[in-house]
Amino acid sequence: MNVPQRIALVTGANKGIGLEIARQLSWAGVFVIIGARDAARGQEAVAALLTQGLSVQTVSLDLTDHATIAAAGISEEYGRLDILINNAGIVDAQDGPPTLTSADAVRRIMETNFIGTLAVTQAMLPLLHNSAAARIVNLSSSLGSLTLNGDPASPYYSAQLLGYNASKAALNMLTVQLTQALRGTRILVNSVSPGYVKTDLNGHSGDITVEEGARLPVEYALLGQNAVSGQFVAPEGPTPW
Image 1 (cartoon, helix red, strand yellow):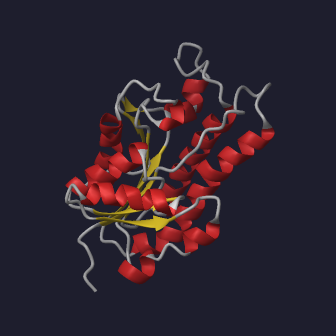
Image 2: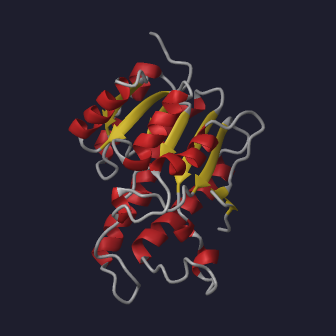
C-alpha cells in the first residue's frame, strides 16, 4: 500500500473555505481527503482540484449521520491520519436572539456544528494517534467567544445568533478539553477563527476572500515541532475564550 507522506481530512470541503483549505494543503504537499455530505459535489470538487495537479480524493461524510462517519474508510485505506480540520458547519434562517430564535433551529445547528464535529473527532482519534505529529484544527468563530459576546464595546456584542454562537462556544470547549485529554501525546488541538469570509454561509457578505480565510487554518494544520496547543486564534491574533 502506497501511503502518502501526510494525510488530511477536511470536513465540508466541497465548497467555500473548506475547498480552499483543501487546495492550500495540497499545494503544501499534503494528500487531502475531502469530506462532503453530497457525494456528487464531493466528486466535482475533486475533479476541479485534480485539473490543478493536486492530490485529493473524497469521502461521503454527513455530520448528522454517524453511520457515514464510521464508514469513511480512511482506516482501511491508509491506517492513519495526520491532520483533521473540522470545517463543516451550518447556519439557520430561524436562528436569532434568545427571545426570538427557534429551539428547533438551535438544535439543528448544535447537531451539526458541535455534536457532529465531536463524532468525527472521536472516530478519527485512533488514526490521529497513529501519526508521528497530528494536528486538529477546529474552525471556530469570534462569535463563539463568551468574552467578546459579553463586551458592549465589542463588534460581536450585537451579533445575537444564539444557536450559531453557542455552537462555536461549545466547539471551543471541545478544543480546551481535548487539549487536556491529549496532553503528552503527539496530537495538538487548536480553535481557529478564519475571519469574516465571503461564503455561501453568510450570503457572501464577508470582508475577506476564501483564499485569505484559509491561510490561518492551514498554518495551524501545518504547525511543526514544539508547536502550541489549546489556543483560540483569529487573523488579528489570540482571541479570548
